[in-house]
Length: 229
Picture 1 (cartoon, rainbow, N blue to C red):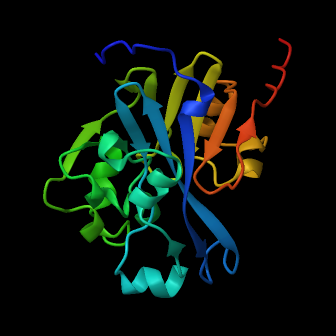
Picture 2: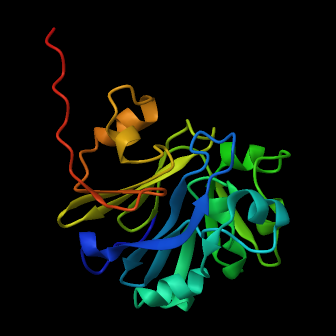
């Protein structure tokens, strides 16, 4: 079990990191539009838990089809006055190229992925595998829900991919929720027709809600009343 934290966390200990903007290609549901790619840093008393690492560089197919305009994960951390050397753990919400592209910046650091996601990560077309396989890579596979650090839990939220996971941070001011891409944007998260994983996340009634491809931070949404028996 993770050791107890020396102090309670606050909502302000979760930092959105704008990693890139991409132009979605023709044929994509968002084709022709520009959207953000976010990572997130959770500041603990003894280090940083990083959620996703943005887009890598040097892949011609990605450059041609998505036209990423991004930055290095170290620069993103430093822009929030966080030390990249303090990263003690990485969590990949899933293993698509825009969430794992700079994993190689953290050799020797444990990278938490769901086993179901690992099982398909190497299938052709799922991701850019050369961004996953690097010297010092230390992937730790988990299944389902798990506390991975003090006040930090991963929740299995399959849907966008079979092994997608979201992250919950317990703070003194309430829950901070990192949805990842369980929902594409705020509208999808709030939609009444949301899938089972999103409905589960909404029921957490988190104080702050972060999404991988949404520019803003959502505040707590009122729960829908349950139908009478």
